[in-house]
Image (cartoon, rainbow, N blue to C red; front, side, top):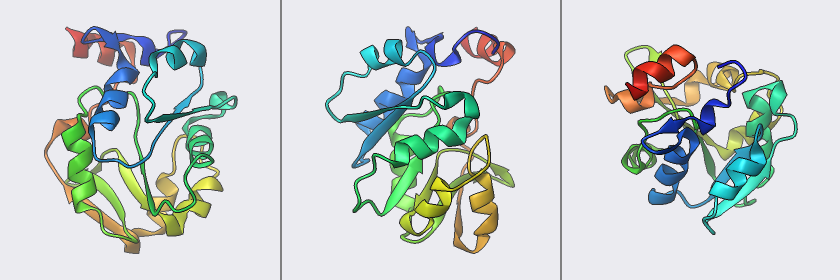
Length: 177
C-alpha cells in the first residue's frame, strides 16, 4: 500500500481494522488480543472496549509473524487454542468467527478452505503454541500448518469473507467503489 497505513483507510465509515475488532467483540471468542504496530497510538485510541487486551509490536516492520508472537505473549496460560485474525479482511463478521468456533476440534488446526484455496482466520491448538512463537516465517505461520497437515481440519466454505483481504491500492479502490 506504499506509505499509507491500510488499516486506517475508511471502509463503511470507519478505519478498516475496526471491522475485525467489532467482529471479534460480537463473537463468542473468550479472549480478545489486538496487536498494534504502525500508527499504534491512533489505533489504540479507537480500541476502547474493556474486552480488548492491547499489545504494541515495536517490531512490526519484521512482518506479520512478529505480531503473532507479540499477541501470544498476552495469552492466558489456560488458553487451549488461538484464532489468528487479520485486520485487513473487510467482510469478516461475528458470525464468520463463530462458525469457525463451532467447527473447531481440540488438538486440530482449523482453516477455511475453498477447494484448495486457503483462507483466514485459522485456529491453532495449544500443542502448537511453542511452534507459533518460534516461527521464523516473516508473513505468517503457514509453515506450521504445512508441518502439521495431520492436525489440519479443513472448514469447507464458499463465503468470500474468509478469502477477501485488502493488500493493494487497487484492491482497496475496487472494494470501496
